[in-house]
Image (cartoon, rainbow, N blue to C red):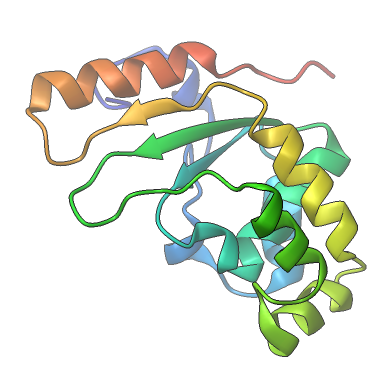
Length: 155
């Protein structure tokens, strides 16, 4: 889609899209990239909030005032479950991440209560759909709808 839009805003960026699963080097680099982003798209997939680096991204974006967009990925066998009070209680008690995940958050100065607040704020927004297994025309329409929600930060 970026290639189709010659003269579009993405052309001015060295890397118009940062994908944490491919470009993750270290947590400081991750946080810096989030802070330098105009938008952070959070792909809502099964167990996404059990990944500490995703939580670091969400909290970092919130702290930096970076716009976050929840995108619910519709994929067979990978249904996202929206968190309920039991999930948030389990998160606060260390039951979601385990000791290693919690240690990773704390190494970045992030407490579990801040994670819960950031997730609750993120999920107050209406999650837009993305269906990777549907036709190209539907995927294109869904991505275009997401791009319409993206904003550029003003200096």
